[in-house]
Image (cartoon, rainbow, N blue to C red; front, top):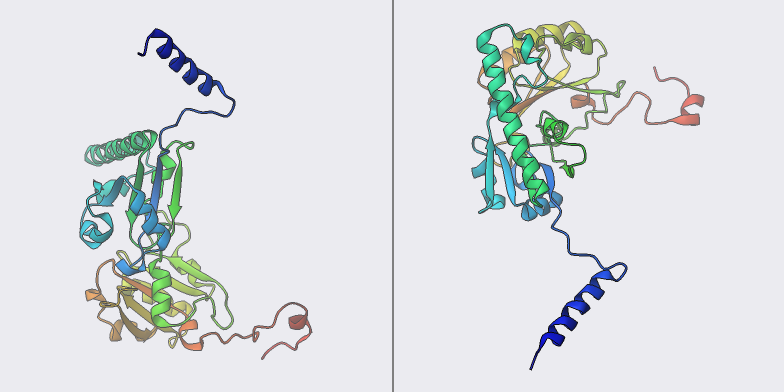
Length: 302
């Protein structure tokens, strides 16, 4: 018969085990916040991204079609949505906005950001894995400001993805850094207000240029390009880069683009523009790919 002595011995044994050096109480599962690049098409997702999503307790998506596009990976996980407008006014001094309507909108969006970041922080601190799924590569126009707003001691990680620059380069089957007598590839977008590195300044280098085409004014852009690039400089538009079913490459030149291409009806925010000699010369280079001492000793190519 188990009496007081037995139960006293039992609890004493537990106390002894817990006091042994190196013996630790089991800690709660460690939470983490991930930003996950999903590639430009569902089958361009990486193995690392799949593993993160599989472990995730909560999936964070932009409002729209993402939940349908990635349904195979999300399955029955808890999903939080953020509005596309969450990007607006980030970094603005709200008190400096003079228009009452604009200031009210900015305050509302700032509150939405803060509430969402609060939910993320709380979930991670309670041991959950939260994964923000973002199309393409989140390092190009993704929502990485999430990490800027979260506490620095909160566990976070970015899983890179296949972006439209890489997918479009694959579609044209040419490598952008090989520009015969240029090395640089400039990734850019429309000249938004306040920008100091305007596209026309960048064009002066003659480098390969890749334009992310949100709100791009094609007539204005090609007027600038014609001032800095020969008319026969090749140009390519890639629609739905990386998609086996939808991808389309449209080729032209700096001088002929506005006549050759129905640019007004290109798929909005689903195409990318590439400009440069690399589209024609491939990997041929003016220095013949010699370098170092050999290059110094060789006669300069004409």
